[in-house]
Image: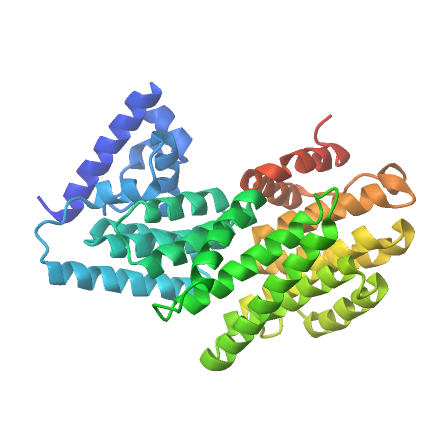
Length: 412
């Protein structure tokens, strides 16, 4: 039997299991998977990623496990061949990341997991899968990918810490702020207490500081007292992260490092307003001046730098909303939320979309004329699709999403 025939047979077996688990016919299963019932199994035996993801959801099984089952056993491969196969898939996954082809990256990462032989290989492939899901804005999937990577073991300590720093960031993206801070605390405590044991330790420490500093900054919106102490702690973290990423960028000439340092400057500005060392009006002027560099989104900016401009918009809106008179804040809020939304759409960045929707909703509710007199949200079918997609990706955003839909006249 050929390799393609083997894969088709294994895929058919999975489909039979899915039918049995759901109590469905093949026709009903095909409808759920969005496929023609006569073409459920492709000739190549290699289904597309959306098909695999939908099937994994029905089976309640990780995507990588479904891919591994379809690919089948690889005992006939020598260790050397397995490593070559893994290395090639890993390199292709990284190249897909550079192109912003995140669905392709997830697919390649899952295939790399299927041929991984050692725990560190499997964990690395899970980390690549995390990167793909993160790029797609599927943060819950990203969280699961990192957990799966951490379950491999034993892992080199540097690799485990790297995975944990990404775990902290996944929680931060989902607004699980206590979890994000706790994990980052553990990483920073260890790496601050000893000399680096691996070249990656310096970057992991910088990233953990970046996550913890921004987590503390976000917590300023929720604390009822002692906000100044929290702001001072956030400032220490963000200053250290800024210095580390600036140094890393100068050493590596890496645009991603430059962009993170650029975002740290914006975060520090919000903290300084909270501490009273910079006025809100002055901070808004600084943000607007910075955004003059990003007037034309079709210019040749790197994706990382353009995303950083998006976070400058979000942070500027936070400052206007939290530290300016309601009427005075309306104009900068409108400009900044609109710009953040435009950048989010340009980059297909769901985290920026969530913030743009949330801040625009807050602007409409805080204005002197109120949302009622301003009129309902005007949304076309594309806007509704983006809003619903944001609600699906961010559980904490769903109540706000429902209120926006109600304002737009889609629910009552």
